[in-house]
Length: 416
Ligand SMILES: Nc1ncnc2c1ncn2[C@@H]1O[C@H](COP(=O)(O)OP(=O)(O)OP(=O)(O)O)[C@@H](O)[C@H]1O
Image (cartoon, rainbow, N blue to C red; front, side, top):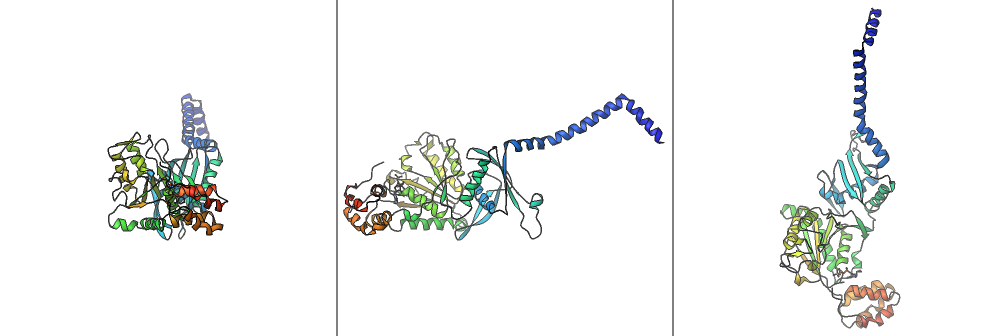
């Protein structure tokens, strides 16, 4: 029986058609296996040679900082796959939307990042009864240079890893009309901005109330947004105040230069619609852009009606504080600053008496006694704090000299 079988096999092997078919079949099987493995093989080669990867999971304290960074990144405003969480902010809790599970591609500091967020995947992430599932963020940079990701993680850790960060993030508009990644500036305490009594504190209180009132706005069907207009002469602290408010409120600053001739209506609308969450949206020197409605275009591209539409469209990005500044309130079209677009106007005027004395004492803490003499030497003149600051810097270590020469300080700030 066995012998008959082996004779049959031998006969088939001598049959060229059969052996040809067998070889072809084997080739096919091996070829199919290679083809199946090819994508993972290619991925392995690319990852090994051209990509740097870092994985952070939710058991690490860095994970929360990374999610906060991801939520604040301009990419989050465009992302359509989100994860929602309630997170503490001051004494309250707020809703935080961040890019959700899956793959995300974004640019950071000129490098393309591929970020994958997953939960409960693999052995590490298995959900077992009574245990929190482990969530993982894998960051891949299209670069062989490890410093790209390590520097990013250091920045994330510094800015979002604790409450002792002394910087706030600033977003500007890139030349191609998109929000840039984050740069940072030092926080400015409100106490370092010298304003008329209670002005800064009242605005801070107003903004705090607004930020904590999402539900209040929702139940009344009012868009959750608030607009401020700060007006007054140059060098009185409008920009400094905005920076201080953002610092105190722990918000980013998103700055749009409306005078840029690279912006058009469509881009502006898109920009405001994707403004980074949790930020103060700032339009500076709005009077220099539009003097009146007849001056239809600003720079090259923005029209007055385009600006109004874009501001109203900010409603889709709710929770924003929109702040405009101007040196010339009288030059603004009423439509631009009507309630709903601007909810609160605040004059930031020249410094007088007590305000000047406070500033003097802050610059010369060891010669607080000279503050009144300095104010008296000004003979009732009101001054731009920027001019006072310049004077104090000039007489930095000579408070008596600052008092002696106070008479040289002009009554009017330089005109823009
Ligand atoms: N009220 C102030 N308190 C403290 N520093 C001030 C104040 N006003 C101006 N300064 C200082 O003067 C400089 C210019 O201030 P800032 O840019 O805030 O003025 P501004 O009102 O926004 O001016 P502009 O209208 O020209 O934009 C900054 O260095 C700032 O520190």
